[in-house]
Amino acid sequence: MLVRSARLIEAELDLLEPFETSFGVERRRRFLLLRLETRDGLVGWGECVAGREPLYSSESVATAEWVLAEYFLPWLLDLRRPSAETFGRLAARFRGQRMARAVVEGALLDLWAQKAGRPLGEMLGGRRRRVEVGVSVGIHASPDRLVRRVGRYLDAGYRRVKLKVRPGWDAVPVAAVRRAFPDVEIWVDANQAYGPSATGRIRRWASRSRVAQVEQPFPERAIRAHAALVRGAGFRVCLDESIVDRPSLEDALGGRALTSLNVKVGRVGGLRSALDLGRRARAAGIAAWVGGMLESGIGRAANVHLASHAAFGLPGDLSASDRYYADDLLERPFVLGPGSTLEVPRGAGLGVEISDRAVRRATRRSRTFRA
Ligand code: OSB
Ligand code: MG
Image (cartoon, rainbow, N blue to C red):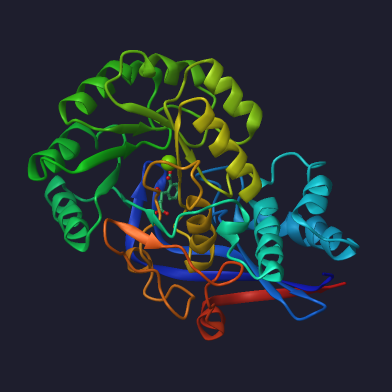
């Protein structure tokens, strides 16, 4: 299965609604797509979740494009037996660059599963045909507007909501959602916006509004601060940005700094690492679930396959296409099904049909690398 060419596409898609978090507002997502073509005519796709600016993590579209163009793609095209394993061993020489590594691995695994004629999730050991999902809801202009937005998501069929919070946008809007919807499962995510001195306050407003889970309130290196929040908390404490590999997970587990783990494929360097971390967390009695990065349908397909694995036990941040984009780059969008679920694609590999026309429309520029 020799890779004959690699096309790196810089794409842009307008979000249907702006998405505001503690680190900024996103209206239009810029991201990289990778299209690999093999000698025997198979085409594998990957989506890189690095953002235009290094706000969520230190990687960006520019750093990912640089390391892919200068190193990873030439290495890949030189491999005699390209596979996730052989590429992974080469890429392991470099520090970080996990989102860039993940996109290459994703496209290779898509090819690998296509060659076997089976869905990617099944190849990874996943058995579910549908996966449970929730919706991540950005910061809004007022608690009223947030409540209305959440109401529309509940009407659409979502059963759990994750509200973005930050200092100044927490106790009041969260209480407003709780008051309007006494039974909905509420999670919150701060993307590192608080200092450790906020521990008591977070505990009070989260408990009062019966929040089920608080995600990454403190900076990524602040393991002990998260452990202090875990002690005596009536909600799960979830880590996202803090966990990037096996050692960081082991340290957080040893320090009792989490009771839930958001597993994002890009953040942890690829699907294989994501599965390993999910299984390790589960074995330690920690709930793991698949997070999202506002992916197009291409990245979402990989996430949905991952979530079909039994390691993941809570509803993922994997919403239907119409939560994000008017056109999701797929011929058939992801739609929300019964019980707040998405269907795991049944076809070989990613199992989704990618719309060449939609990709062309979203493309700002592209470069092709050949063996
Ligand atoms: O922290 O989970 C996060 C999106 C961009 C950056 C960080 C996060 C998110 C989300 C989006 O919450 C979840 C989704 O893709 O639906
Ligand atoms: Mg998060």
